[in-house]
Image 1 (tube, rainbow, N blue to C red):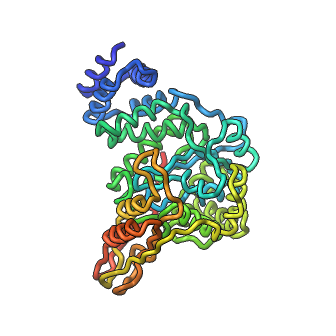
Image 2: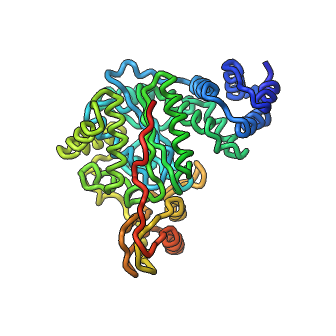
Image 3: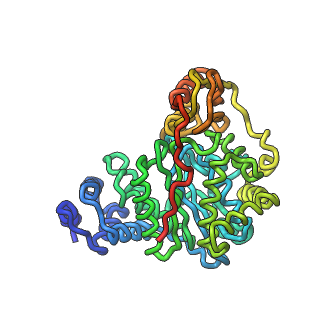
Length: 435
């Protein structure tokens, strides 16, 4: 079997066999197939596409390129959740303690933020001492004993994806449906959970800008998960404005803690409940969405969800005093209010622009090696549909550099679209996808 023949076959629009796909993934991971040949294959896939069977085969070959976690020794149906990335998306910090407090084991692999999107690991590391560098044994111990663990993905988890993504990133082959779906699902399947819930963002601040593309991606990933023997569902959620009011690491953690106390933003709570309902149903803890949401509300009301967050922080080396006293989180040196120049109604807040402004402040990364400032951020005071009077405060910028704080304020001001009349805003939860 030769890579040349596989490239030629895909160039002609023919489907690759299971054996051919496994051959090229293994060869590329092992360094036998060079970058230039894999680049040619990736471009051929972008032009010709892959059918459903090919996409599943590619995902499984990438999953099997490294170690696959075996969580079968942990009692119960283990669940995992993945977001395609957004601005102000602190959902995992709220969702995982709630689900774990209801007796459903959550074994979650998370990543860091890159570019305008935030990362769960960066937010959790706002708790002094917190680490996501867990051994396999410690990861499984935490899930068994307290019902939840959140770890960074190890180098040996789907290594083919890491190599392929690095190549796609520099060859303009990122935005192809099968390649996106296989990249996400190979890591989720290697993580070992029995059920997977996918939060697929749509809109300006999302990777998939068009709603129909988000639905297509969700359907592809749900299909892969179910065909691979995992209970899988997806929820399409809005990212035409940031989720919640806070954008930035420490202030997002504070907002997540407020939400666990029942005092969080309406849109964030709605997304958490939508995803949590799917997780509880897949785990067999609830028969329907209404029952699941009532269960989630109960652990918020009795404080057990917040206590579960504290257990998670403590088990992974973090200082739990920050869970109970959020004033301990460091503040920024400079504050700048963004005021409305005209009266009207907030029609849209360009999430990508807000995320980029946070990155400008130092709250995000341009490369994986960049360091971040956890104290900076943006607190939105007006959201979609809100009435605005001239000179009302739209947002507050928190920065540690005076010039960058001013620049970020101007960028956030441009992100707000104010209309003379109130217009209908898209729902926060757009659709549920399951097979």
